[in-house]
Amino acid sequence: MSPLEEVLAALPGALGALKTLPIRWDEERFLFWLKQDYPFVEALYHYQVGLLLEAPQPHRPPLVQALMATVEELDWLLSQGADPKEPVHPVRREYVALLQEMAGLPYPYRLVLFYFLNRLFLEAWNAHVEGEGPWQELAEHWSAPEFQAVLYDLEVMAQGQLAGLDPGLLHHYLGRILEMEEKTWSLLL
Figure (cartoon, rainbow, N blue to C red):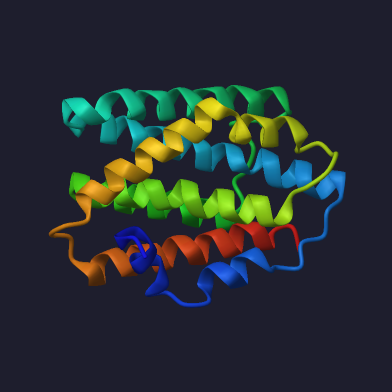
């Protein structure tokens, strides 16, 4: 088991619970969920900019690629009808607040948590989303080889940052990310 897997294993059952939520798919519910993703992705953009500002040179190219993917996702969300002026659902506000709190952590924690943010969301996405629907274009974006390469680079970089991190602090924030992912996906129940 890799060190990153060991970190995740310290929170037994949380990922499984997230992946087995009884999601009810319908187009209207999904479009609401998607439009409410905009404030979170915008906050994620700011989080990534902060990472990039402190990144050592070898980390910059993958972080720039991840940032570009986020910019493309924001554009796509706007094309789907997201409105930055819309009221933000309390669950999304809570997740944005968590990102803002995590932005105050030292770089190694932020990078590892950024990796887990991406990984946990994509694991839940892959568990819940399949077939045709309004999510197809987004699914293709996240499964594209370029984005998968960025995720691999993030994993390698995160792996290199684990030594010396306080496991308690890391588990605390990872647990909160999992909690927020479950709340976010629960908007589709």
